[in-house]
Length: 287
Image (cartoon, rainbow, N blue to C red):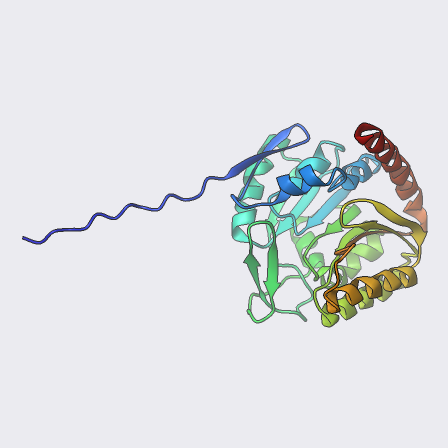
């Protein structure tokens, strides 16, 4: 008579719960958002303030690299604008769909890998983010095509966070950027000289569309410079790149950038003023 060895089934790690504003969301087990926000008081705090100064006119917020929907959840609690959240990773997208349920239809989720098509690759998830592996062959769709398919109207804010591929996202939406001229907020991260060069080519693209001034934040959420030009950002890029190449202790790992055209610069000025008030409150609390 043969005996059979019993195997214990492996339990899937449980999802984590985290509160964004007044909404509880689900995260992957090793997602680092709670640690980042606990350690850095200003992490992800500016965008909700920016959303709060947008005109309440039905214009859209477009969130590319939406992850599990944490940004959309934060934004939706500070404005009534409809939000289009675009995420390419299947697991993150599934959580995004669940996490936006309490928002009563304000957020429209889209699963897509966005880009011009000039850069290929599959998404590889590490629990907190999904990075593109350029050796893969997943197809991309331009952001202009995504917007046409889902029929949003005018866009007042475009946010991208795609770990070094943000310039490719921006370049895939020339029609929308020319028509709506929204505020543009992106994670200015690069892991190689090629990514740095691609980012800086994106600056020229934005400048050609009338984006004259930018506001620069460090990766912890602190504002560095306000109302400067892209040449200043290139100097900061050189500083960050030198630290990376020399393997020196990094004081800044990347920057976050907000770009505005002259007609919507006043919204940025207002949001920055409100954010500086938050900074004062933070210092007072910590002191």
